[in-house]
Amino acid sequence: MVLIDEIIQALYHRQFTHLSIMTDPTFSFAKTKRLLAPCEFKAVFDNPVKKIHSTHFLLFVANTEYPHARLGLAITKKKLKKAVDRTQLKRHTREIFRLNQHDLPPVDCVLIVKSGAFVGTKQQKVDKDTAWATAKAELVDMFGKLSKLSHTSESVSKKSIVQNSLITISDKSATGDS
Image 1 (cartoon, rainbow, N blue to C red):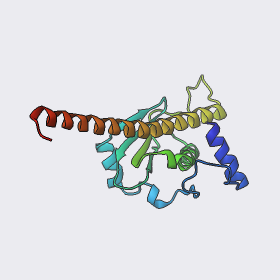
Image 2 (image 1 turned 180 degrees about the horizontal axis):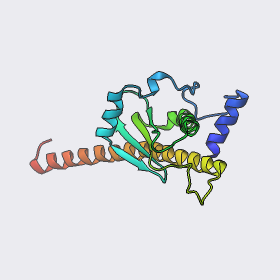
Image 3 (image 1 turned 180 degrees about the vertical axis):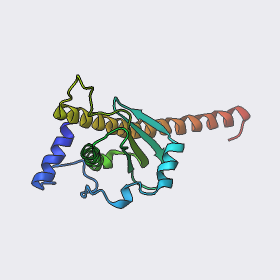
Protein backbone atom coordinates (compact mmCIF):
# COMPACT_ATOMS: atom_id res chain seq x y z
CA MET A 1 0.00 0.00 0.00
CA VAL A 2 2.87 2.34 0.81
CA LEU A 3 4.50 1.50 -2.53
CA ILE A 4 1.36 2.51 -4.44
CA ASP A 5 1.16 5.79 -2.53
CA GLU A 6 4.82 6.45 -3.38
CA ILE A 7 4.17 5.79 -7.07
CA ILE A 8 1.09 8.02 -7.11
CA GLN A 9 3.01 10.83 -5.45
CA ALA A 10 5.89 10.40 -7.90
CA LEU A 11 3.51 10.47 -10.85
CA TYR A 12 1.80 13.53 -9.45
CA HIS A 13 5.08 15.37 -9.01
CA ARG A 14 6.65 13.76 -12.12
CA GLN A 15 9.74 12.72 -10.18
CA PHE A 16 10.78 9.29 -11.37
CA THR A 17 14.44 9.42 -10.35
CA HIS A 18 14.03 8.04 -6.82
CA LEU A 19 11.90 5.02 -7.78
CA SER A 20 14.01 1.92 -8.15
CA ILE A 21 11.13 -0.38 -9.11
CA MET A 22 10.53 1.10 -12.52
CA THR A 23 11.66 -1.10 -15.39
CA ASP A 24 9.39 0.67 -17.86
CA PRO A 25 8.98 4.36 -17.03
CA THR A 26 5.68 4.54 -18.89
CA PHE A 27 2.94 3.28 -16.67
CA SER A 28 0.57 3.36 -19.63
CA PHE A 29 -2.49 1.21 -20.14
CA ALA A 30 -2.38 0.76 -23.91
CA LYS A 31 -4.80 -1.33 -25.96
CA THR A 32 -2.23 -4.13 -26.08
CA LYS A 33 -2.66 -4.52 -22.31
CA ARG A 34 -6.44 -4.94 -22.53
CA LEU A 35 -8.71 -7.82 -23.35
CA LEU A 36 -11.02 -6.51 -26.03
CA ALA A 37 -12.54 -9.32 -28.08
CA PRO A 38 -15.23 -11.66 -26.73
CA CYS A 39 -13.10 -14.68 -27.71
CA GLU A 40 -10.31 -13.41 -25.41
CA PHE A 41 -12.72 -13.19 -22.47
CA LYS A 42 -14.12 -16.65 -23.31
CA ALA A 43 -10.62 -18.14 -23.34
CA VAL A 44 -9.97 -16.82 -19.82
CA PHE A 45 -13.35 -17.99 -18.47
CA ASP A 46 -13.00 -21.44 -20.07
CA ASN A 47 -9.41 -22.18 -19.00
CA PRO A 48 -8.50 -20.31 -15.83
CA VAL A 49 -5.19 -21.25 -14.26
CA LYS A 50 -6.16 -19.54 -11.02
CA LYS A 51 -9.17 -17.82 -9.48
CA ILE A 52 -8.47 -15.16 -6.88
CA HIS A 53 -11.44 -14.49 -4.60
CA SER A 54 -12.26 -11.56 -2.38
CA THR A 55 -15.47 -10.55 -0.64
CA HIS A 56 -16.94 -8.69 -3.61
CA PHE A 57 -14.74 -9.62 -6.59
CA LEU A 58 -13.43 -12.62 -8.48
CA LEU A 59 -10.32 -12.45 -10.67
CA PHE A 60 -9.95 -15.14 -13.33
CA VAL A 61 -6.34 -15.68 -14.39
CA ALA A 62 -5.23 -17.56 -17.53
CA ASN A 63 -1.91 -18.00 -19.31
CA THR A 64 -1.21 -15.89 -22.38
CA GLU A 65 1.28 -15.81 -25.21
CA TYR A 66 1.81 -12.08 -24.73
CA PRO A 67 4.93 -10.91 -22.84
CA HIS A 68 2.90 -8.79 -20.42
CA ALA A 69 -0.24 -8.98 -18.30
CA ARG A 70 -3.58 -8.00 -19.83
CA LEU A 71 -6.79 -6.94 -18.09
CA GLY A 72 -10.44 -7.44 -18.95
CA LEU A 73 -13.39 -6.11 -16.97
CA ALA A 74 -16.77 -7.83 -16.91
CA ILE A 75 -18.80 -5.59 -14.65
CA THR A 76 -22.49 -6.16 -15.24
CA LYS A 77 -25.57 -4.08 -14.64
CA LYS A 78 -27.05 -7.00 -12.74
CA LYS A 79 -24.41 -6.69 -10.01
CA LEU A 80 -23.95 -2.89 -9.94
CA LYS A 81 -27.14 -1.07 -10.88
CA LYS A 82 -25.80 2.47 -11.26
CA ALA A 83 -23.68 3.34 -14.28
CA VAL A 84 -21.73 5.75 -12.11
CA ASP A 85 -20.67 2.91 -9.81
CA ARG A 86 -19.73 0.63 -12.73
CA THR A 87 -17.65 3.36 -14.38
CA GLN A 88 -15.94 4.35 -11.16
CA LEU A 89 -15.09 0.72 -10.38
CA LYS A 90 -13.62 0.29 -13.86
CA ARG A 91 -11.51 3.41 -13.43
CA HIS A 92 -10.18 2.31 -10.04
CA THR A 93 -9.43 -1.19 -11.32
CA ARG A 94 -7.60 0.09 -14.39
CA GLU A 95 -5.55 2.47 -12.24
CA ILE A 96 -4.53 -0.25 -9.78
CA PHE A 97 -3.66 -2.60 -12.65
CA ARG A 98 -1.69 0.16 -14.42
CA LEU A 99 0.40 0.85 -11.32
CA ASN A 100 1.03 -2.85 -10.60
CA GLN A 101 1.45 -4.13 -14.17
CA HIS A 102 5.24 -4.43 -13.97
CA ASP A 103 5.03 -6.78 -10.98
CA LEU A 104 2.51 -9.10 -12.63
CA PRO A 105 3.37 -12.25 -14.60
CA PRO A 106 2.36 -12.47 -18.28
CA VAL A 107 -1.25 -13.58 -17.79
CA ASP A 108 -4.72 -12.58 -18.91
CA CYS A 109 -6.97 -11.39 -16.05
CA VAL A 110 -10.72 -10.85 -16.03
CA LEU A 111 -12.38 -9.18 -13.05
CA ILE A 112 -16.02 -9.80 -12.23
CA VAL A 113 -18.19 -8.51 -9.40
CA LYS A 114 -19.53 -11.30 -7.17
CA SER A 115 -22.00 -9.21 -5.21
CA GLY A 116 -23.06 -5.61 -5.14
CA ALA A 117 -20.23 -3.95 -3.28
CA PHE A 118 -21.95 -0.61 -2.97
CA VAL A 119 -25.56 -1.48 -2.23
CA GLY A 120 -27.23 -2.29 1.03
CA THR A 121 -30.68 -3.23 2.20
CA LYS A 122 -33.33 -0.60 2.83
CA GLN A 123 -32.55 -0.68 6.55
CA GLN A 124 -28.81 -0.44 5.97
CA LYS A 125 -27.37 2.63 4.30
CA VAL A 126 -23.94 2.04 2.82
CA ASP A 127 -21.41 4.83 3.19
CA LYS A 128 -19.96 5.31 -0.32
CA ASP A 129 -16.53 6.43 0.86
CA THR A 130 -16.14 3.38 3.09
CA ALA A 131 -17.37 1.12 0.29
CA TRP A 132 -14.88 2.56 -2.21
CA ALA A 133 -12.03 2.27 0.29
CA THR A 134 -12.95 -1.37 0.89
CA ALA A 135 -13.20 -2.06 -2.84
CA LYS A 136 -9.82 -0.44 -3.54
CA ALA A 137 -8.21 -2.42 -0.71
CA GLU A 138 -9.65 -5.66 -2.09
CA LEU A 139 -8.39 -4.89 -5.59
CA VAL A 140 -4.91 -3.99 -4.37
CA ASP A 141 -4.85 -7.21 -2.33
CA MET A 142 -5.97 -9.30 -5.33
CA PHE A 143 -3.30 -7.88 -7.65
CA GLY A 144 -0.76 -8.31 -4.84
CA LYS A 145 -1.68 -11.98 -4.63
CA LEU A 146 -1.30 -12.24 -8.39
CA SER A 147 2.19 -10.72 -8.28
CA LYS A 148 3.16 -13.10 -5.44
CA LEU A 149 1.85 -15.95 -7.57
CA SER A 150 4.39 -15.09 -10.25
CA HIS A 151 7.27 -15.22 -7.77
CA THR A 152 5.98 -18.50 -6.33
CA SER A 153 5.59 -20.10 -9.76
CA GLU A 154 9.13 -19.04 -10.69
CA SER A 155 10.56 -20.66 -7.55
CA VAL A 156 8.43 -23.77 -8.10
CA SER A 157 9.63 -24.09 -11.69
CA LYS A 158 13.25 -23.66 -10.55
CA LYS A 159 12.73 -26.38 -7.93
CA SER A 160 11.23 -28.72 -10.51
CA ILE A 161 14.19 -28.13 -12.86
CA VAL A 162 16.63 -28.97 -10.08
CA GLN A 163 14.61 -32.04 -9.05
CA ASN A 164 14.35 -33.25 -12.66
CA SER A 165 18.10 -32.82 -13.18
CA LEU A 166 18.80 -34.72 -9.93
CA ILE A 167 16.48 -37.54 -11.03
CA THR A 168 18.23 -37.67 -14.41
CA ILE A 169 21.63 -37.80 -12.70
CA SER A 170 20.47 -40.53 -10.31
CA ASP A 171 18.99 -42.53 -13.22
CA LYS A 172 22.27 -42.29 -15.12
CA SER A 173 24.27 -43.40 -12.06
CA ALA A 174 21.88 -46.29 -11.41
CA THR A 175 22.17 -47.58 -14.97
CA GLY A 176 25.91 -47.00 -15.10
CA ASP A 177 25.76 -44.42 -17.92
CA SER A 178 28.30 -41.64 -17.70
